[in-house]
Image 1: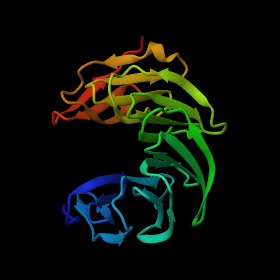
Image 2: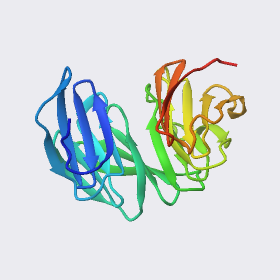
Image 3: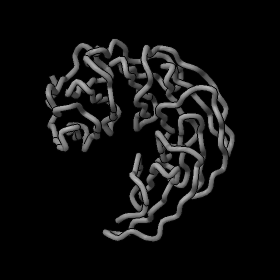
Length: 247
């Protein structure tokens, strides 16, 4: 399957569709049927995407961020473009498509409400001391987690926007990625320091599970297979599966 004519930079997927972005500033929506892919539709978003997010409950809705703007898509149509005066590094959209969190080079998280084609900034959260590298909502949407280049992760309460889990400072280098377990009880982080760390939301951060030396050169991707199984991908071109044993 090849639909992009350039290197793919990021992608998202739902059951019957794959959405990709590349260095040509285009977003491709590719329908899937079994092991076959259909004809792709594309749209130019006016810049290279640094994050591509689908609202899981409404996958026709997508939020794309570039260094200098936020783009809302409905299927393959741009419905709004919002320019910003800060440098965007990553973003995440809530499963129902009503809220987005945008991370920036200045270490701040900006919360936006979404209504139709309108974005409204609701809050600015300041806790991080480095550029934001990853943001993800929990599956139950009660929380979101953020990570930064200064090796810290934070879990936030979605409703109050207060810190829910703090002192997540056990990596020794930049955090590249994070992921939630399906039951929203665990959050995992992967770092340039070669380690993955798993935190339980209802316990102090110090009770973490650390997977040392998960990948030579650093961990660049994480996902939970189920509530007790974590998959990691790294600089060493390997994918590893870990069974988590609670302490």
